[in-house]
Image (cartoon, rainbow, N blue to C red; front, side, top):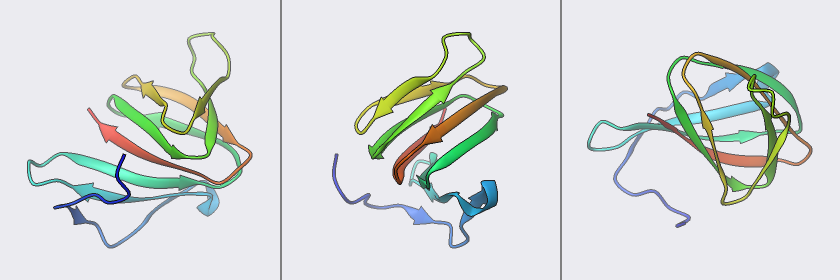
Length: 104
C-alpha cells in the first residue's frame, strides 16, 4: 500500500467521534467514491453503520466485536474487517491505530 493517495478531494473539516478519540477525514475520488482516512486512539468505542463498510487497518491493530456472537476478533495492519449495514458494533485498541474505511 502506498503512503500517498493521489487525485482525491479532501473534506477540510475533520469527523470527530467518541470524545475526540476517533477522528477521520473524508476523501472523494474522481469517480465519486467516498472513503474516510482515520485514526483510533486507545480506548473502546461503539459505532452504528448505516450502510456496509470495509475497513482496512493501515497501522496498529484493533479488536472488533459484531453482534454475530463470534466475540472479539483481532485485526492487524494490512488486514480488513467488513461491517454489515445497519449494525451496532464495538472497536477497541490499546495502541494508536490508523484505517481507511470504504463505504460500499
